[in-house]
Image (tube, rainbow, N blue to C red; front, side, top):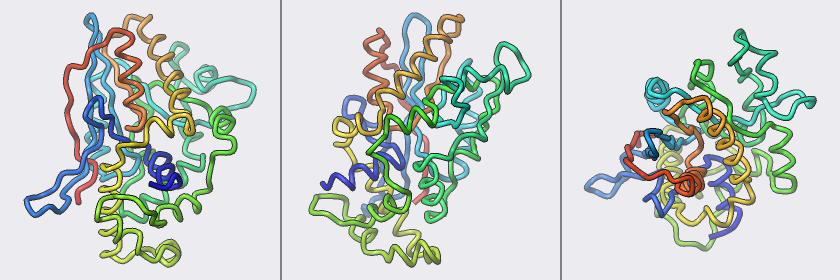
Length: 291
């Protein structure tokens, strides 16, 4: 499978099934073999009365998908979320400027309007438009009291990604590049679409359906991305930041957490939690795309 294709899938939707946990993304097919829906998982880990749910997410999806997630987040004391935020260079992390942004001294609000400006988010927004889906950022309520930023700043991310980033257009082009690899049959139709016309004029309803099904099949079929690409997209560094925030919240006596990140992060999160002594308890699935 071409390296550019792998990087496209991993960077843009940040999804990757984890063999150890039977994956965080799956494609359901009907009796006729045709795809019916794409799902993401919520996996629970527990230790000594504390629970940590790994809420793996796809960053573009149906509106009802994000509405259900918003409701689900009422179940936690803390939701630790990913977002590459653009913050003043005079501080090391968004958490350091909460005092300047919020109403409460202990847990001021985070200015999430400073997020979504990195190249990956811009690409995801464009992809959502082409697929007729919603982009995650405007559809999740990040202002809720139990939401806490747990990610790198834009500057930290750009430094970590130096020499590895691609422009949104380059990433879109890579989607339509067919290589010599064994992939889902739906990808052949996807790769045959006229990319430049679709970007300029938008897809027809039939083309949009082909794109949705092809992308869904690709995401559910991408089993081999984790080891090769984790260093490239600094999953490890971002997860370390998230778990550092988790440790801070644990020290406050909280016991119910969600790690709300792209599904590609979940294999690494689960391995780190196991090393902390957490055990897997359950896994539930949510429909992200109706196909």
